Length: 343
Ligand SMILES: [Zn+2]
Image (cartoon, rainbow, N blue to C red; front, side, top):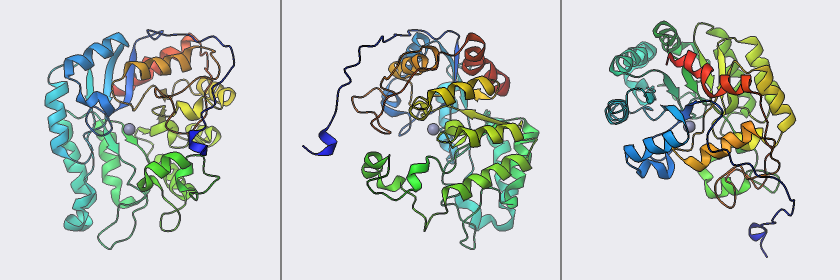
């Protein structure tokens, strides 16, 4: 038998709680409606997706697909928000490819595009993970996440009172050598382009330091660190940045695998930072995914699959529920996002 064929079935006899509806209504603060990140659900009609959202009691979905393509943003604004204005929030983006043409004015130009996107209806800015890894200035130098040439963008988001949802670096294992010790070996073998070995890429912690500088140097700008502050493997690090920067929030999209395998640390993290954590799934509009997240947050179920397939995507381990109290659940499901997005 090859190692990949080995699929041990747990013989633990444990309760499995089915949570049909969340304890409170939900705002999904990190998701994607279009392909490829919207998953299979991107193929469903809008009314099919709305009925799944109703079934899961998800009242609002934040769609981060505006990305760098302004026509995608316009299309999504028409297609989703135009149809169900109260159910969708769309984020705009920065098109880095214009840097060589705009030269030293790039920061101001990107800020002016953002103003346009907000006029059209965008309610936030999504910064994708290429920032810090691939984005280069006209001289060909790698742009650091805290590069002050981009300050006009952060000042403008503060002035427009819109949050910046930023994803850099994460996950940590994507920077490690692809060998028998890499805990995401299967995933990286399936997606070799997700691997960022140093060199040629900068070390993980160097990018994280830049993120920390960016957030601290722009206290008027609200930053949401995607995937538990881009460092779900180290909640101590994330907690320290949350302590230092009141303008920093995190979402939990696609990281219950990390949170649920460190349940004692994660539960305390949710209690300590209940005002700064946003619910999100990052898995498209999918009923089973929503219910798995509810089970993780609400129950004390033990040793269960964090994904919806037989073999979970991020590694062959299982997770434990956090049995969070109502006051924490209410903030994470609804209240924190309601305040940030002015819903
Ligand atoms: Zn995402």
